[in-house]
Length: 275
Image (tube, rainbow, N blue to C red):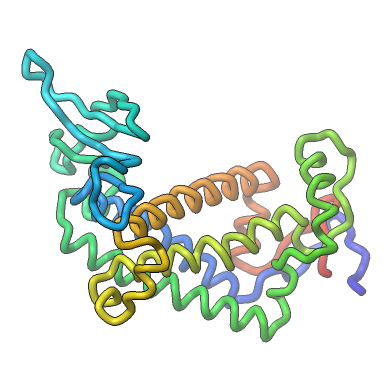
């Protein structure tokens, strides 16, 4: 049994392996998103098909000129087109001007359109993500820290009460260990669902992997469909990290960030210390 938590008590919450891999993930995901958008700019559309098929296009960025010759950027989602000039479609080219381009240079790596360099960055940091994930899981399993992150059947009835606590509709959260049931649910889905799937769909998009592992491409419905899944998973992960950052800053930014640097965390009221 864990000791009774006391508000203000300092506990060693994150091992050095967890901290190092956490920051490696952060860097890797940032570079992967930026380089991924660079790669996407080379073919700025997504199709729900095994091959490129405009009839089954679910997302597209484009640029066109009006009657008076003025360029406009457009974004088309499931057949509905929106004008997104200066944001998407016709936007920052990374050189101080604007051009036909899906995503602006401010959020791509490199900033200027360079598919070859984008692929180099993406491939290298894809391996950084894979190796840091493996290291985290192996070390976490050895240290028995990993079990505190995984959602268990006994946590499921606590999901709604925890949500009510977050919405201030309940005075106290349900009893929990280091991580509350909603955190466990998020970490379980991300660590064992989203990240492995985004790695596998990324592999399916690699011509080298395609040559030696055709079945992987087939599982995801072909390279174009794998591309759509890959992009969708990226959006979901961005949503997760955005939510994560909101919670970090709303529950004590310095305490949370410091614990990911030093390992030591100062308990707040209702915090758990272990399983």
